[in-house]
Image 1 (cartoon, helix red, strand yellow):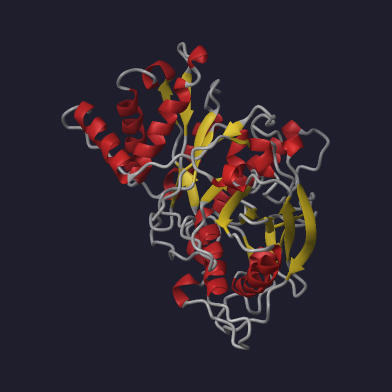
Image 2: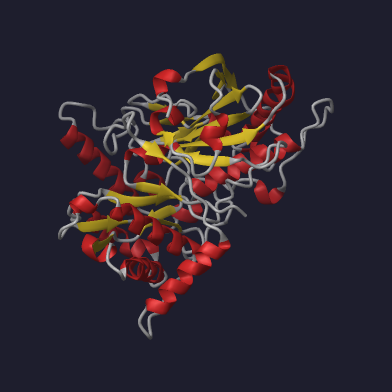
Length: 448
């Protein structure tokens, strides 16, 4: 396996892409300068960004790439940002501001890095099942610019692999948007790019169902005194003061999660077919107890299977240790009243962490045990209104005892349409969520 020192990329251009003048007068942010955050945003405000890399096959020359691909991506990005103005803005938290907020200004822009790989490693990086060096993959995901008082919201990196393909690295600030909002944006960008007639003066418009909904009152109305929002924000203030005495607690700088990755860290993407999911479902049903009501979705089955496999690789650490598991869910259709499906921002959170014994996970009934615990948690989410249990759930994380396996989590869920992102050069060959590599996490996305 090549090491990161044996492969490198050349930065060709670093540019800023600004939103073009708005085409749609009904955009909620047409005349607004700022956008407030909600309790769902404050959960993630200091956690690491979500870094994803989309790999696309493209065998034409570098000249064709610059004229056909990059030009279209850049032009359509400017158009997409006109609908999603906060992504070109900044997260701000001034010394006298009680809460962070998104600032939108006429000079806003998003950073775009154009690079070229000097290695013929496209096939290795983009083939599912291949083990890829974690550090090497990070070369294709850009960084955000973050200080105590400001932070960029997104960053893009387009890397050409001459004669093979290209990648789009997409990094988003988790305090601003969740996976569903990120999927909305990148699918909107792809739609506009695919329908862009570069020689035509009339740019394509985004269909109404793809346009973002920015109105925060649909969430803040349930937390009118900001009780839950300030619970989460104050917890970050306390955490910063405790971990960095003397530092400015009112800072947007992110916390470090997990251990630093090394050249020994590898990662791989595996594909489960419908038949694989059906086999897992049948295995669980055949071994579950009569009367068990199980939520046997593809997400529950895939996540449980991945957890069992992961814990089995840690056999030397298995005694009476506990395994801590969490997963997030989209609350858009779980709140009362529901939040519009195209709501832009964060609207995800988790229930209380799940705790199981490692020896049970690796036992003969391990898959059934993990499926049942996750299934019970999913069912439990439907029994309560979010705001009724927010403080109780938050408190459960404070009381959670650490595990040698870390806090096992998952990024994404099968219904997120990342594998359907077609800019005009077919769907991605592979999508990697780079940001899971510093913890005990998986990413799960659907193919359809």
